[in-house]
Amino acid sequence: MVLALNDKKKTIEYFSSWHVQNKITLICLISILLLSALFVAAAILLPAITTTQIIAFIILIPAIACFGIATCHSSGLELEKARRDYDKMAQRLSETEDSQITLDRFFTISNDLMAVAGKDGRLKKVSKSLVNTLGYSEETLLSTPFFEFIHPDDRVSTRENIKALSLGLRSVDFVNRYRTAEGSYRTLSWSAAADDELGVRFASARDVTDERNFRTRMQQILDSAPFLLIVKDTEGTITNCNDAFAGMVGFTRESLLGKNIRLLKSPFHSAPSEKEQEVLRSQIPVTYDEVLVTNGTEEKYLSTVFPIVDQTGKAISIGKVSVKVLQ
View 1 (spheres, helix red, strand yellow):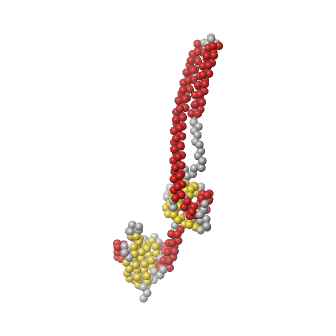
View 2 (cartoon, one colour):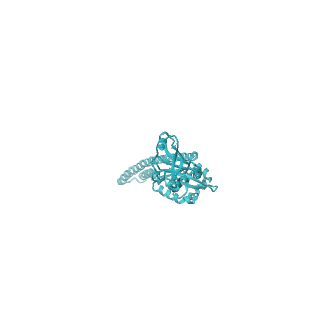
């Protein structure tokens, strides 16, 4: 695929050997005419022409004629080949132009942030949505090394991701931050792949800035709340919790994420309770009283276990909120 075409078509000219062959054919015909004229003149002016000269002339004329005919035939074959090559190139150019038009339209109408980057560290093509999101002109994005737009803290990880692409690996949900024309940063989640034959990298991104900000604000609210919260998948792996829960079991929140609840020495470490199994089956929240041990002291909590379902309605995780009951 050609990523850019010249604004004006360049005329395609074939300089094949058939041009030269046509000239040779013409020279042969002229030579035959000249030799014939010389022979006639010699017969008139020099009646005493020897037999050897007559035989030489008789042999020379057909030889030149055969050479001219062969050259003419070869010229025709070369011309036909040149025409076929020309037609193939014209068709290829037409297909390339069609592909370029399709790509241009796709980049214009797509809501995804798309870009094509070269090995020289510059963007070769950007979608209209990427231009609108970052606020720069298309000319600025294409003429400036794209690393200058990336947040300084994300440049090392971005270079490592590019190296992985060069090894033939695909990148999915790689996140980095890009500076906008206003000076703020947008968080982009990229999926990318490299094409070594073309020497480019194709990338598509989603702007997850608002989503990330919302998650951060929600986590701040959960961490400030006076209750215990834990979310785990059906295998017991912790996918989220708040600071109150992490403090109760003696860990930081970041160190708990990805750990299995069964490995923790806490009131939550045992196998899924009957109430959790009931919630997974019925997909209906269940609230009940229970006694938990915190800091060596038994305390009464009001706990609610609830299911978390995917788009198909299947329960993929289970959450639990426990509120201390004041005596």
